[in-house]
Image (cartoon, helix red, strand yellow):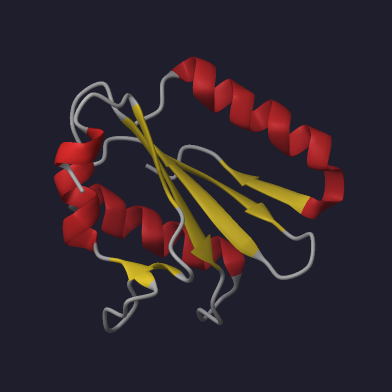
Length: 120
């Protein structure tokens, strides 16, 4: 997979469930996969289906951001969308322009979006 996206400046991962939890499943992305995709100048966007993490969405977003910085991502922002079921999109190593676009996107979604900027 890494070789297939070698020249990409933006990589979007859309696993069924998102980032691996306590155990890795075929429906999730492993931290090792994300670490392998990380490189200077590349932005990574990851889908993650919200779980029943203790403390709710904000705690889950902070927990995942911590895991992402542990593997080398320098910046982590997230948006939580609630059209039906709740899901996160984590934006890693984005420049200021993309981060501003994330804010604009969240504003268009109104009350169905919750933004978590500067998690890392």
